[in-house]
Length: 505
Image (cartoon, rainbow, N blue to C red; front, side, top):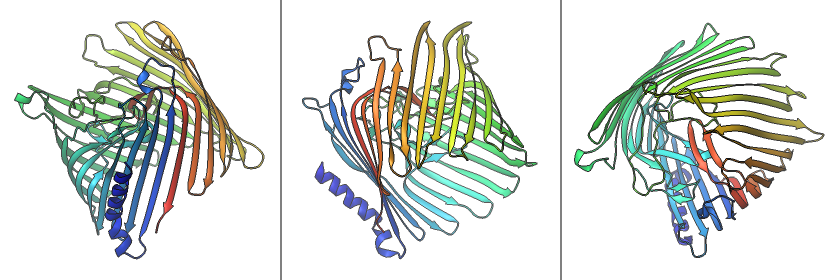
């Protein structure tokens, strides 16, 4: 592995050499994240995630000079698992990108993230919290004269080769996508946009039926400031799919209205998705279903959700800030119906509220929230949840602060009650670090660990170096961020993380 890493670092330096060698005032920055872990028995029923060690290296190199920007990643993993070959040592050069700006034209070659509209028909992006990183590996050309933005792009999907959740390597789908977009910004009060793309699956569902493909088009209208009170966004999309011998068509509609008057705010969201989904090839031996779109869900950003391919619903959020904005109570209510044309659609309701407060001149804060969620089908409640959260930062003398973050969920699923949650309380010192204790609980799965306890130490060792050490056990479970969910295993053991940033030029 050592020789491979050296080779890849050399290749990364070669990629960045035009920046460092040919331009005055060039800048090269590196961001490195090194993770050392040793996994003990985490108390679940899966023995595949116990008793092994991991070293994970993530090195990002970015250079820029004049109109040229280049970047590359050197990634590697090494495992210590005696007598077990389930994990593979690896080092590789990834995410190589070069971008050149020539007046109003920008040319990109390599890996780049891409989203159309609000992500209903295409969203290739990176979400660190759940280990997701999908790019389009190819090229794009963007032309942005005054008041206009025109872009064409093409490439193959490139998902991170290493699954950060299960710590296994994932075969690539490598599906081909090409498309374009146009945005008109020539009017101060309105922005208009339209886009289209087509996707061809690398692996067909039925070989004799030819290649499977998906095509989509759509557009949006945005009114950012109507009478200095209201902002409006409206999007409509159409999709056609061929999968084996089957051809389907879908459509989607999404809108938001954001009203602000004094300290009062009202947000209204509406969503209609009628049989729209964007999936990649079904790759043999891959534990992951490749998703190339993340539509709005109407949920809280960290809330788990049901399938989002055939749904209609709405959400209303009301908030009022008073005492110069130091106190802001709010309420939110969401109604969704999954598969509305089915004989027995799934009806979902989620209502919650809370209050955010600032005091001690803004250096202390308190956020309390709670709510109730219910799923009903065939006239019966299939799932319910009562939840509460607190996020409290209390300034202490000097540069110290006490920080408490906690959430607790009282759930019912298939007539079975269980509880899960976590709480972290810590003492923090500005520009030094902190010491925290985390307590978690989960009673969902019988005969598995229910109580979790861990200690966390963070240390800002230097302006460029942050160290974080975790020891003990931490609760796993489903984690969702912005409409994407992954099931994380519980962790028991020791983990050391080092993050450093260096300016080489």
